[in-house]
Length: 515
Image 1: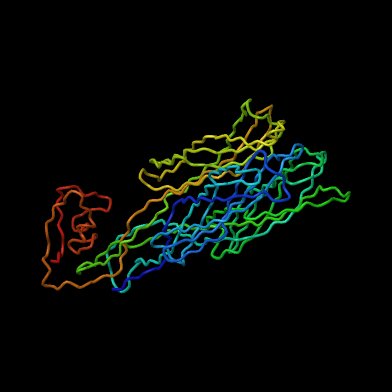
Image 2: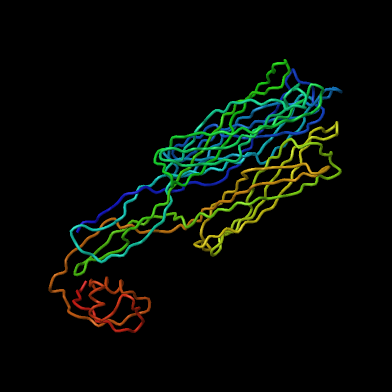
């Protein structure tokens, strides 16, 4: 008898952890800029520029873009800004990593510290988090049937999630924005921020349609020396070629603005009121599909000696993928001891998960959204001020198949942030927060690799045997023990398939062979 086998590829997570990188250096004020009297804000944004895998190692390179806002020493000068870039490199070592594996790395600046050494020199230290995940492919074979022979067999079902695409695409966005009517023309650009919101993904056959909105916020000094800001939203649609994609594929999409360039231009009247910008955006696409494996896990041939050889493997079985979305609302009242709010320039929101628990039928997720509000004030000593507010959240995701002890990977994402200035020193925040989870059951699976089958000689036949059912016995166990089909046993004892075995029950086993 020949075993019929099918091959498939499953994914294995070789490494998944968060590493902290410390990036530090000195920033020298350019010759064209005045001396520093007071630092108003140091803003840091990190981006991964490359990642290379080799045996036992992931080499990650990136950069931290810094924007420093400060008040000059010279009285009467307007607020100034300095842009600087620090490069970093981190080596992640883990046994089992190979060069043909796939790695996804997300980065975020967790903390920035600065020290004004003198009026022309600033020391900056930043803590950058690298969330790295390395996956590899493993080819397995499982038995799906038999050729040239009859066998009693049992089947086992596995539900595995296989990553069919883990790719990155780069694209360039170019557009321009004009100073709104009623606002003064631009004297000097202080700060330009870009963030992508309202993303949407639609898989097609062999292609992925990605949509989103780029929000551009500009802080500038007006012609008259006043601090002004403007913003615009630019929709975009990109189509990526992704092999093996179908309309039913489960896709995850993350965007990151890795480079931002801008140029100030004059309008038809000769006023500097047009800002042209160019963004380099990286799209990380992860596409996966659930595959149900219906494999034979055990068998025997009646009247034969059956010896089965196994391979034991560990498999991550996807149990469920619950999702939830909710709108968080918070009224942020800035302390009266701080500078008064005259206008909100920008709000940056970062979700942080503090606790995850898998319970029977539920996944509990707790955390906070860190909201950084950069606003304008009526205080000449601090015309721009940053205020942080933590917004707690708690989710209970329905997951009927989840059980305590299972692993759970949770992702939180702020899809959109809105804000209104309600009253003096009060800002109303609205965040659309999405939570998605993968509940995983890590189990050991025995795959049949080969078998040895020998017909039992006639002299080994014993005739019938009286057997008394023991606790925990199944009809399969008894039939396999005596190399007799389950159907023969049930027919000989006048039993139906629905009838349950109970301890002490007497069974007559026909045509038993010594093994």
